[in-house]
Image 1 (cartoon, rainbow, N blue to C red):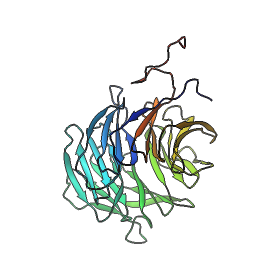
Image 2: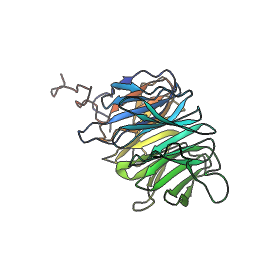
Image 3: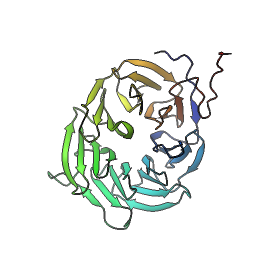
Image 4: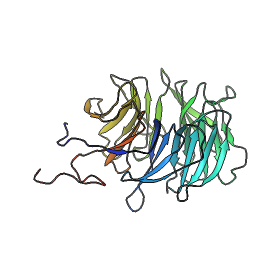
Length: 321
């Protein structure tokens, strides 16, 4: 599946340190979407679907490890090494509330109704905050075995449907929680630490990397079976095409390349452009492109179909001239 045209990424500059996480909003009613990026410079950035900069959220005093957007894009939530999670108004850039923690916050999630936020990190505890009562004490999702949610740093939290939280830890466990009762419902064990976990909302899967494996797991553990592949390298992050579901992209911290694989795991393309390890990758909700974030401080946007006119890509004339 060699691409007929060379993939030319759009480079989105602005960050001054390594990019740690990328998250696209859902597709909006007008067909657009936005992208939020997290960075060790402490300043999450919001971008149009074209890659154009909208604004920077100023207020964290440490690296930002995770940021996510509400479904309607009016709110953003971020988690930082400054021991806080913050909720932001994306139209004004104002910080609406800062939620204190006792250690680094590694991952955040916002509910589909934008009413609650989940956080997890180096405290090994998952908190749930009520945005309607931001000063109230959070609820904790704790395993019955002890005072923690996981036995290691929590690498990722995602919110699935109305009332399910899924958390992944360096203890190799992925846990599903009923957020109404705050009780653990089930868990999956991996042989090594979880390095990333993202929700692919359109395919109803969570995409997990651990060691050299990438796994595509039904988000509510129902319906389709889990699909796992072993790659020749350890991916740092993976994202499945949200519509075609025939390919996935990966980053890796062992080189500077973005790779495209088919669903059998076969490598289809290697995309070169970053000047440092690639920490995060994510497909856009329309499937027309994917974004990669790197140690080099840049975000690169790559077309799924090089040569097609889309956004700031002008495409290739029909006669090839």
